[in-house]
Length: 240
Image (cartoon, rainbow, N blue to C red; front, side):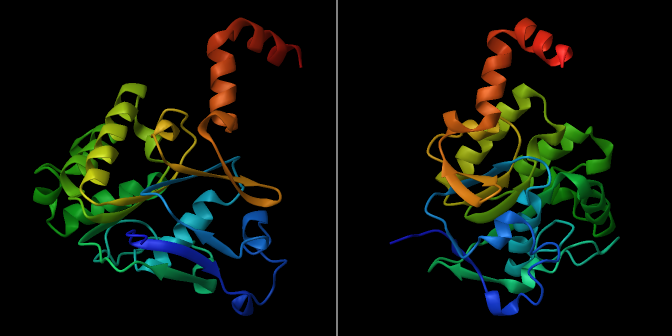
């Protein structure tokens, strides 16, 4: 039996009034029927503008998280910019109920940090204001102190503030939390973060979602090619 908190994401076509209007015009939405989740860690990868963050945001909202990020008890709003996609999604949940959860999005993390201070929740985030730390330190503080396990965690580009070594620390923390019964959905561009063993990777392409392997992702192939011969890659790039 699938013991995950979130088992499937379904697009309800009858809720789509205009398939030619954003975000329903995105290829990932246009071809989406049902996305089944089988692994505790699932990655969304693809070029900018392919809909990774849009789909992750819609799933988060439909699950009950604040559009700008945070846990379910965060209700603040600084700017309403989320799409209508969440209203057309149905989520198939598992038999287990998470005791923790968080929606982390890099672009609005500053707003979440401000809300943590406003609500006096610093103790749950390591005992120090997230604003009093560097961007990368505050990200890791969140992961180490606020994420408690047995939770559903949706992360949108968590590598944005992290150095390569801190991205490895992120992988170690994800592994600890998976061992504690957690589930992750992560949109990322990082070939380091994508390397988490056993994860499901979905590439966002012009004909919709395609499950792929780590070595088949463009992120892995381009990074490997550059590191193997940066001079050749740069010569070709600058010649263009």
